Amino acid sequence: MSDVADPLKAAVEGRLPVHLISIRHEARFAARLLEVGDDGVLVELGPGHPLGAWDMVSCSFSWGPRTYTFLAPVTESEDARVWLSRPREVVSAERRITPRHSIRLPIEVELLGAHPASRPSLVDLALTGMKVAVAAPPGIEVGERISAVLTHEGRRIELTAELRHQTGDGLGFFFPETVRKGRLAPPPALAALVEKLRRAAG
Image (cartoon, rainbow, N blue to C red; front, side, top):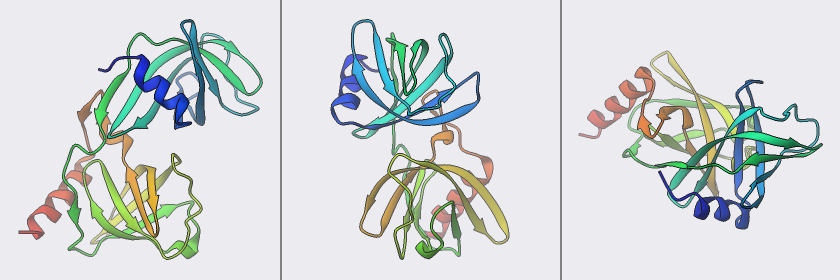
């Protein structure tokens, strides 16, 4: 748990990408926090969003080495923006809470929705994320969530992967669904694959 004001202000000042999930609509939206005041939080979603007053949403964003999440109801809905009730608490967790392992086994990676010319290859893997090298720009923006598929010995593992940073031909992804309420909860197949990499490293 963290102090509410600092991470919210950092998200506004840094124009950090925010992921907003509508619980009622079961839908995800790319968003930005525009303003944080005593009475609420102003979020920019873009036109055509379905959110209405009192819809409950979950917002998450990264600041420094941590991921921050809060729940809040919509208090006012506009065409491209919504006002959220100011959250009483913001829960945080370390983004990299497990070691990454270099790839010493034949593991293929697919980035669903990425440009075919990117030809991704896996560089390292952890329970909470991975690093991928690409041959060409993948057409994915930092903060965007996609489906990634890891294949090893004929077994496929599909994961939600959030692009956290891009440097040259290297992409750093976080697996948001492997951390629940600040606790590590990876799919068993991913945990088994990471353990296999750990053993292969000796």
